[in-house]
Image 1 (cartoon, rainbow over the protein chains, first blue to last red):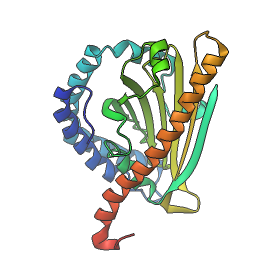
Image 2 (image 1 turned 60 degrees about the vertical axis):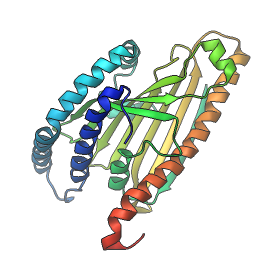
Image 3 (image 1 turned 180 degrees about the horizontal axis):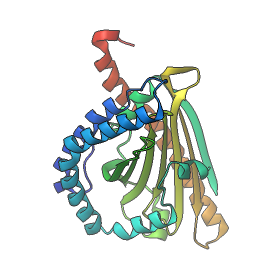
Image 4 (image 1 turned 120 degrees about the vertical axis):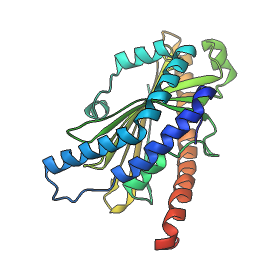
Amino acid sequence: MAHSLAAKCTPLKQSYDSCFNTWFETYLKPLPSTATQSEREEWTKGKTKEYEEKCGKVWEAYRDCVSKAVKDKGLEQMLDEARGENPLVDVGSVDEER
Amino acid sequence: MHFFSQSFHYDHSWAHVNVGLGFKYPNPYCTHVTTVDVLDRSIDPNTGIIRTEKVLGCKQKAPIWIVKILGGSEDAFVREVSFVDPKTQRTSIHSENLSLSQYITCIERIHYTPAPSNMAERTLFSQTAEIQTRMAIWRSVADKMESWMTERFGQNAELGREGFEGVLRNLWDRKDSPTMGSS
């Protein structure tokens, strides 16, 4: 697995990535095409809860570590500018660009 | 402005390709990507779409004349925002350079969708990139710089494909072998 931009965050990053990857594989199992919108939402809600329970703690620790590293490396301003120019808050924004 | 685009298939399902993306780096073909960090991740409760924002660190091997003009360093950073939609099975990824973006911008868009020819076992990859210099410089210099970036982009894209195919084979041919034989 790839390293973090700050060596001290790499162990947290790798624990988080493993946790996410394991969960993600189960998340992508397709629901039956007959599933209704409310069944889908119910399923998403259950999986989100499972993700938060399993990976929430390590995610918070990793995020704290990496957000400090982003500041230390002087990346924050570049990121803020990029976010200002392309917020990319929903999927439509990637497709509309084309 | 220079453009680059390509599309091809991976012989793996959309779900397998998406899981594989988490194992893409490091791989021997893409040594230029050295670090990957998740900055933000959320799951939309209505659509189930996962949005992820990452920052990738790369070692860039820019020609000396570009480094001299721009004063760039060896490390370059890229912001990547991806959307994975489990319902429509569509993955959309936007990437842009953070480093040197006051001079030149490279915006890449990638989509992964089930291939119409075999929705269950093949994935269509499509990629476009736009490369544009931002500063007011001699047009010939801007043009040279854009075409160098575009050329590099094509080379990296080809390495990316080879590398990722290897990652997918390692990940899934091994996992699948007890039940499905080597495919």
